[in-house]
Amino acid sequence: MEEKKLDIKSIIGFVLIFGILVFMFYQNQPTPEELEAQKAEQAKIEAEAAKVENEAQKEPVQKAKVIDLTDSIAVADYKNTVGAFGFTQTAEDITTLENEVLLLKISNKGGQIVEAKMKDYVTFDSIPVYLVKDGNANFAINFSSSDNRSLSTADLFFEPSLTKSGENQVLSMKAKVANNQYLEYRYEMKPNEYLVDFTIRSQGLSGVFNTSKPVTLEWDLKGIRHNKSVMYENRYTRLTYNHDEGNISKLSESSDFDEETEEDVKWLSYRQHFFSSILATDDHFKTAALTSTNLVEEESKEILFTKSYSTKAPLEFKGGELSQNMHWYYGPTDVKVLDDYKDLGLADSIPFGWGIFGWINRYIFTPFYTFLSSFLPYGIAIIIMTIVVRLALSPVTYKSYLSQAKMKVLKPEISEINEKYKDNAMKKQQETMKVYNKAGVSPMSGCVPALLQLPIFYSLFMFFPTSFALRQKPFLWAEDLSSYDTIFELPFTIPFYGDHVSLFPILASVAIFFYMQMTTGQSMQMQQQPGMPNMKFIMYLSPIMMLFFFNNYASGLSLYYFISNLITIFIMLAIKNYILDEDKIHAQIQENKKKPKKENKFQRKMREMMEQAEEQKKAGRR
Image (cartoon, rainbow, N blue to C red):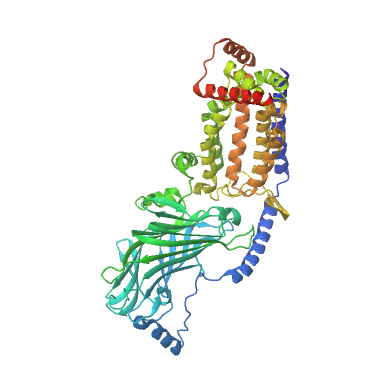
């Protein structure tokens, strides 16, 4: 009865603490006028810092040769350098392709995309989301001419021609040798789509190309920072690719430098957390050399880029000409959008997780949350999903708590054995196993339910940071459920914690402390076994680790853990106080002891091994 009162007092104390925290933050929250003033001042400071840093870091991925088109000598030198391709009119100009969701700017110089802007999305500081801008990307075909010139399309001028094909916009960029001889980049943009068809082909150039030497496609890009925490964004910024008949692989997201050479590559995704630049090809690249370089060393508001990606892939001549059908995707890393291109399999570039974890995330949690958020506020949808998950797992929680209750009933006998055989570890283990076997209790039965929950927990751990549906969706004091919430800005940075205080991780840490007190309190009362972890230390360490680890994580994930642990606490209290009866459990165990217990093969083998080890030990003493 005393334990029951103690549990009720504990939960009342927890509710009071939670209420005090919420009230305190409500009372101390700034007025709307103060918030606006703070935001304006912060925006001014960040804009000035970004301007200075932008000038310092605005180096293009690879500089093409700059030509002063007003200088006749420079133009003549250019035409002499490019040989037959000097036939193309030299003019610096930009052609725009635009639909309802995407804006692309293509330059005459290089015929490549020099700006890609998402029209429906903004960054954390309300700037439009750009995937290509200010020279952060370079796309080129490198080849040799029949007169032994090494040329790159990045240095060539292209002549544009913009036409219509039904509702589609078609842009033809031609680097000409003559009016009917040219290398063409063809872009076709459809309404309301992020995918742009892209074709590379040549006409009448079989005598201009040196077909005995390789021709190489090169694509370089530096990922532009979009999120509030650059370290958090960089953790989910990665080069992913489809190769070898559908295998999905990734370069390292944490190494300073990583590289691979792969065969039969179908598409390449330069993922920038919630947005992706993808190049897919219908004909597949025979091989591709891939590199990823990390550009982020520490958390900073001034860093502009996260990773630098590079791909080099050889193209094959067909009858002395080039012909490669491809697709550019510049858009959100959103399963709802990417699933529209099932024939290319672009949704596989989303980091759902590996194996069964990814399957659960993609086909259970993602559709379920999408359904809930279609008619509920996004934060409420997380709470409802958490409640459903915890109720679904409540039978597992029951099994785990039942195992703990049985172990508690057997505690006096186990303590007696520990004291009786304290100087003989082997005999102590033998006698302990006999007690468990007679009582029909397995010490592992409490671990199995926990293992069964791991796929669910890991899938949810991957779901919240990568769910596009949570991006920039507010809830309570959190402005963005896909990023950390902030209730206080620190005037300094705490290592591994950051320069701000997030409330959801605090609430989650308090909840996990109470949860662990309930689940490990019994273990702490038992005698500490040599070599076993100190449960009291773990009970205090785990919430502190969560507090530090989740301070820069998605607030939606911390909200989930807070609600999940809160619900689990109530479920366990209900099981303990209203479902399980320790007296009945004790009586059942005594009945089990009276029944003859048949050993299975594993138990018999373990017993024989222990007895054999004991006999050897006794023989050694003689």
